[in-house]
Image (cartoon, rainbow, N blue to C red; front, side):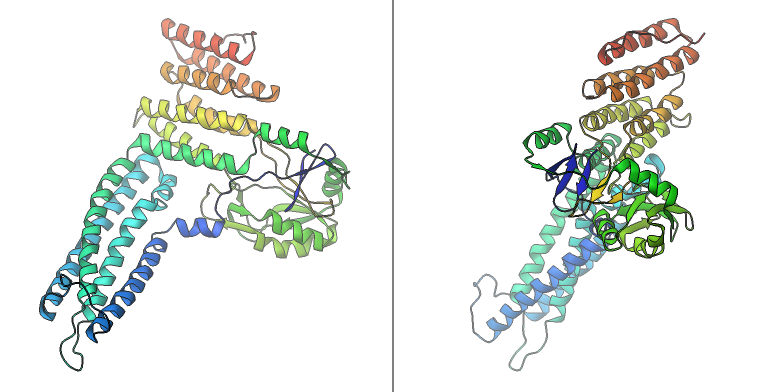
Length: 476
């Protein structure tokens, strides 16, 4: 039974295996910073201040004849420079208001058309954050340069280099404005939104779930043999029968679990923790979220659990690839609603779901058993379920597509595409169950015989791809 040795490797079939390196998602702190409109602008403002300090120092050195600037920079009086900087600052702050307005409009459209959960995708868009940041930073730089024009002991000081840099930033702002208009026009298009969510799904799958082939290669190359020091089945029984209950400190969606930190806590207490929830689940304050064996360590674990768990008002992609699946499903069922009736958007979502689930089908959903450096099991995480992911992807779409042959046919095509990537008989059984349900839905809701014949034809092709040849009884 697989189990991870924190920081070193894992035990598989009584053999110790070095952990393979996988690309990881950013920490929850970094993700929280990314999903804001203030972090990138703040960084760019700091950069603008540092650049001004540099250019102002050069201007001061030029004023005292310590260095010489090129002749084409040493032009214009202080009044002319002041007028230029005032015009630049006024123009930039006006454009900032326009950028804010366009951004808010895009967020409003995203909320109405794609659902409120899609707004975070637009907020965390680096292009939007950078555009806002570069304009605000340019404004701050221009104001600082304007304030530097003052009287020095001998004659009026003119920061020629700072003025030239402000003019250069104005040209940069113009290019960024053109980019921003094109970027917003492209990003609010449904195919681009759907493709972006699918890309997030691929990244989350690559980060959280190892390739089956990679795990097998590591198993074959493992040379260090070591017996597990605990039997997982017996340990689970002991936790269930004699473990102490750990209660949630506050309500919210579980966004991040510090598995390594919990493992260290359990080792210090000589205990084992079994988690009942994964990131993405909603937890309620005062309700059980874990069990600890022995029972006496429960209170200490409950106090420490708040430091290793992050909860919030919404789900994120950190440790939760199912969230991306739910986003695609939400767009699809909104498109299939009578108020929208956009079949092609639903078909696009199914196409991208086939890509993500095909990638997931090539992965090994191992049990989350975390061991300390001595080999003892210290943490048992809530396991992943391939069946749960597939059902989350197709159940709601199938129910919303009742009586719509085009969508039902694409559902069967999607299942056939995924079938080419499955690696276990259990995965085939999950897809076969969905295939049968699509056919039963079609036979009970599609009245046109030619349409029903097309559905049955795709059904047979999907069965062939799954290696099945037994038809379920038709619904009259």
